Length: 400
Image (tube, rainbow, N blue to C red; front, side, top):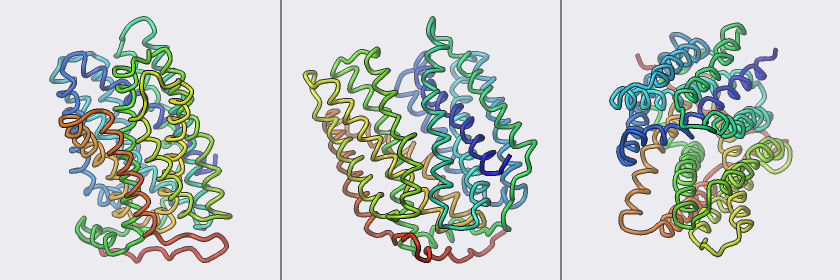
């Protein structure tokens, strides 16, 4: 099996585990603690990830991305088995925080392994969007799996066991197939890496754009269901099929967008469009009333994910046109956005709701994504098909 297929299949099983965990963890925690406390547990796991991320480049240089991916997946399995044993509140909260903290590490290792298979930057968009599409297909299946397991009762341990089972084929794939290791890793201190990114307008802009995307990935799924169900009174029987349709654009749009960026348009135009659609759609949710037709609500939800699919495919593709698997420090910063957004977004949302309403929350967050996303896009150096791609960033210094 070709390395890219192995890595994309690994991403499929990683997504199945990760999405199941994301959907179920908050209800699980609130079964024995308050919603506020549950939020702090999740934020605590994200904070742990932020502290550990700077150590990853050195671990990759010493042990290799493939070996680390297997080790992290094994630790994650043990953590999920601990959750499945239905521990007390303290142990359950600790296991939950660890489970969340480990997910970005797997994404980071997969990034490095995939990038090691890319020799021609003109194919980066297609390679990375195929990789992302594997994730999105699994993400569609995860809610169906949860529904089947919890159809009769809130048997959360069975969900944790299913999530652990999804990691078994992941571990087997990476244990039996030797993947390209790429070139020797270029190490730098975190300070040097930040300085290099900040002084490179292109890398700084696309990294900030990716942060905006991940803020959306928290604001939209956390607050939209609460608003539609609790405030507008839409039953979960309706929201279930609406959310399933809402996620379809991730599967249908991202790979074609990557091909389009590689061959015809480039990254910048699609990224600009994606930010405007995403921000405007998120803000429009604040205009919904109990009288708003379900089809109108569904159309806005689908549009928000269509815009997010464009943003994700373009920020991923553009960043990895500029770096290689050698630059593990820059990749660690890029992937460190995941846990960072899990800290920033809930705090910002709570502050807005403390002094305002859900309507104000959607107006502010949607406007923020549209305005600052468009601004970041204007600072990006566009990749033009059939022209020489932007030069790879200069090697970073090594620090031990």
